[in-house]
Length: 100
Image (cartoon, rainbow, N blue to C red; front, top):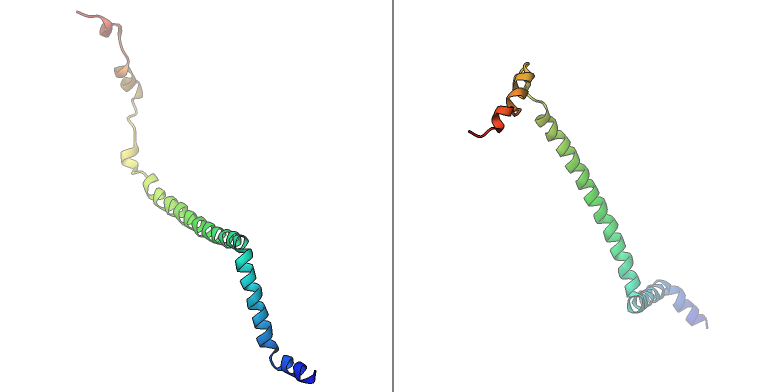
């Protein structure tokens, strides 16, 4: 009896590792769908974080480059002060409807 206890005491990490390995093997054999689901959920969360960070970078770049596009040249953006004449020229007159 002392010999067995001494042997268990000297080799307790080997025994613990063997039992842990047996437990992992049983989990892989019988519960692999559950482990696969957990693994895929973790991968999905990780990829979601990566895509979210990429989206934020994209939004920042869109904002950065849209600021350059939205600043118009002041000389080019002035409109003609006489808007009424440009509107009149685009309106139809009764003379345009007659056919000669």
